Image (tube, rainbow, N blue to C red):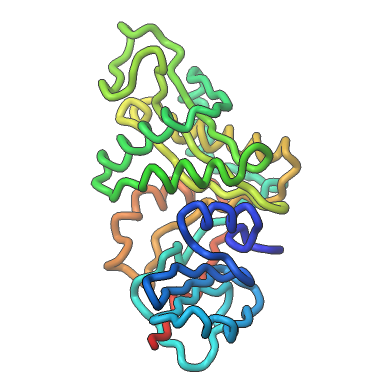
Length: 269
């Protein structure tokens, strides 16, 4: 199974951000030198060709430890989650508490959308609530576009209620009425829960549970086998991602299997 970060669509996304993609490796030119990264590769790519780019550093985030070549040192600044949960879409066994939260949010409405701007507003609001770094608009938008039209979708959750009956964040217009959502991308048999948004009103109504449940059903209809929830708290790095513990509890409430990666390895020149 080829990881999504080794797919043609992801290469298209990286190129839209100014990276050169060659042999599954990403190169960012900086004057007469460059920085290089290779991510989630299942076989070690040929790195000899990189000499022509005169890299100052090469950063590797492999699938397994046996893919780390000599001369690379483990670092403390991975660019990708080092631990995640992967759901088997043919074997979803929801705990009682998760089923309850889905039922509680059943009055909300979910819909597929192409409105990346509304989704980004929701995402921006969510990051501010949690005091997290707001993703760059261009990165979110270009990722969605790179997998369009057949390998990405935005799912938006809204109240469907009258404005007088519920307090909605002022940052979201009433004619949108959106309170939560997610951006899914997929490649091969695996989908990725890349970005998720949930406003204060969405939290009160349990919108995150309904959004992920709708994402699971969407992936099942597409005939996909797995859904990668794209990152949870990693106890091997307690200081670096301690603020992930909240949404980690949420993600672990869906069953699935935990998967660990060896982290990030760098060589400086």
